[in-house]
Length: 132
Image (cartoon, rainbow, N blue to C red):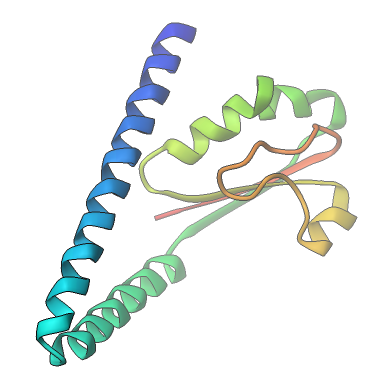
């Protein structure tokens, strides 16, 4: 259980680091290519616009699940140190997992450390997940 989850989390971390390194290298190459081809900037802007449009379509068709958890069970949902929330965020197809404490925090947009930070302490935890 725990060792397998840790190994999986480590593998996911390494994969994300490799993806980031590749993205940085692609940006560097594009920057170099842009110095020699002024039209490449317009083409890149158009390519990014198309990516954003596709992402928008994906989000519009996303499934949204929201639920409230009684205070006594919130810790089980969040997991030790937010482990269950991190695992949910790592599932392929999950776009976001948001955790809020109470209705006031949810209305104010508060709750947790953002998409990758630890979730808040579990009091009247409210969680929402969107998936493709």
